[in-house]
Amino acid sequence: MAADVAFVEGPLKFQLWFAEVDPIDLGVQVRLEVEYSSGNQSFNWTAEHLWFEYDALVQFESELRDGSDAGLHDMSEYPILHFERHSSQEYLTINPRSKRQSQDGDSIAIRLKINAGSMLALYSALNKFGKWW
Image 1 (cartoon, rainbow, N blue to C red):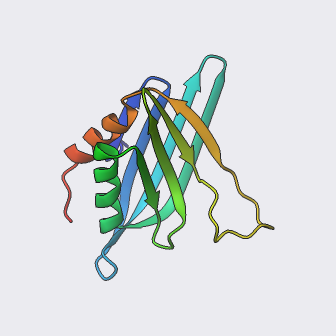
Image 2: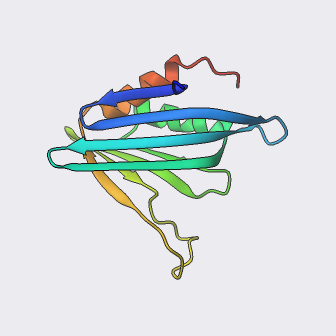
């Protein structure tokens, strides 16, 4: 099944599926997959059953286009993705650490060096998706 939003930019492949709509909270359930393959390293991260408010998706899309930082938080305000642009280099942090997370719990966070232009490529893919919100 093809993703609703997808792009490939250098070593980064990003896919997003919209699974279920919640009309009461104005949000959507999402499946997110990030793949990264560079040289002799590869990484695949999948998160299912994420819930995002429409406003958070709109803000994320705007930040990707206009800002040096773009963060995507779920409905519980936990950070899921954080993109950074510094001069001609971009980075993606997946599942960044949150102040609200327990210090005792298991967590994974990874920071990837991605191609310049990846943030705009994701913005373009999100912008092309026919939104209902």
